[in-house]
Length: 440
Image 1: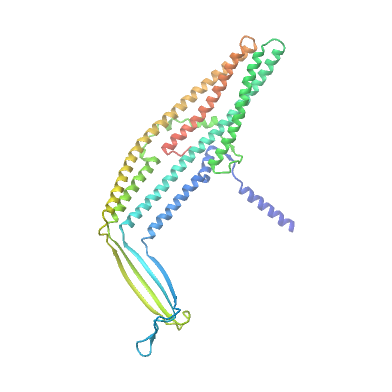
Image 2: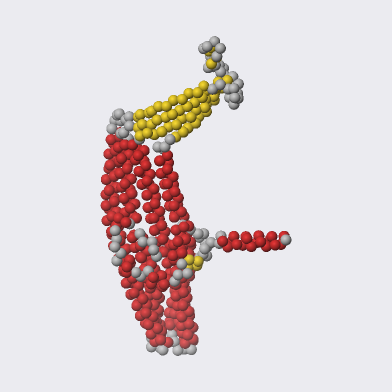
C-alpha cells in the first residue's frame, strides 16, 4: 500500500514538473506571442494600465461621500473644576477624571470645478497608459523579429563557413600533395593556408556572436539569459514569407498611428491643465454631517450599560470663494496655455515626422527586396566564377592568386545574401511598427 502511494506521488510530481516546464522551441510568431506575455517591459506596461485604472478610481472617489470616525479619550490627572448642580438632584460632572468622545463625520463634495477636470484627466491618463502599452508591444514585436533574425543569421553563417572550410581543407590537401610531388608552387599552398586561416577565424567569431544573439533573444522574450532555445523557422522561409508588395501599397492614415495618438494625448492633457487652472477661480462647495457622544466618569467604566452618554449632531455647508490672489491664478493659466501651444506644435511636427518615417520605411523595405534579388543573382555568378577558377587552378592554367580572389568574392557574396535576407525581415518589421501592423 505504501509503495502504491509513493508511486502516485512520484507520478503527480512528474506531471507538475512537465506542466511547469518552460517553452524553449519557437517559431517566429510563437516567439512574438510569448514575448508579449512575458517580456518584462510588456508586463510593466500592463501594470501601468492597472495603476491608471486605480488612479482613475482614486479621482472619482474624492467626489463621493467620505465617512471618518474618531474616538477621543482623556484622563484628567487633576480635575480642573468640580461638578455643577443644575437641578438640585442631577450633577453634570464637567470635571470628571476621565471622559471619552466617539464621533463620526460624513463629508460630501457638492461642487468643485477642479474635480470635474480631474475626472476628465483620469480618463485621458488611462488612455495614455493604453497607448503606451500598444507602443511597447509594437517595439517588443520588432525587437523579437530582429533578435530572431540575428540568431538565424549566425546559424546560417556558421553552416556556410563550415562548408567553406571543408572545401578549402580539401583543396589544401590536394595542393599540398601536388607541391610535394614537385608539380606545384609553394605559394599556392600558402595562399590557401591564408584563406583557410581567415575563414576559421571568422567561424570562431561567428560562433561567439551566435551565443550573444541567443542571449539577446532570450532577454527579449523574458526568459533566463542562458536558456537553451531552439528556433524552428528557417531564414530563407522567413525571407520569402516577408516579401509582400501589399505592405508597400497599404493606404496610411497618419492619425491612426500610435505615435500620432500619443502626441494627441499630450495635447489633450495640456488642454485639461488649462481647464484646471481656470477652474480654480470657481467657488468650492462641500457639506458635512457629524454626530458624537460624550461620556464622563471618574473610573474607566465606559463599557458598562449604566454609563450615561450625551449625544450631539450637526450638519453644515462650506463655501470657499477665491477673491484675490495677486495674479497667481492668472499666471498659472497663462503658463498652461503656453504649454498647450507647444503641445499643438509638437503634434503638427509629429505628424510630419511620421509621414517621413513611413516614406523612409517603405523605401528601405523596397530596396531590401530589390537588393535581395540582386544578391541572389550575384551569389550564383560568384559560385560559377569560383568553380571555374578552381578548375583552372587544378588544371595548371590558373594562379593561386586568381583562385583566392574568386574565393574571397564568393565568401563576401554569401555574407551579403544572408544580410540581405535579414534586411528584408527587419525592414518589413520596421514598416509594420510605424504603420501599427501587428500581424506577421
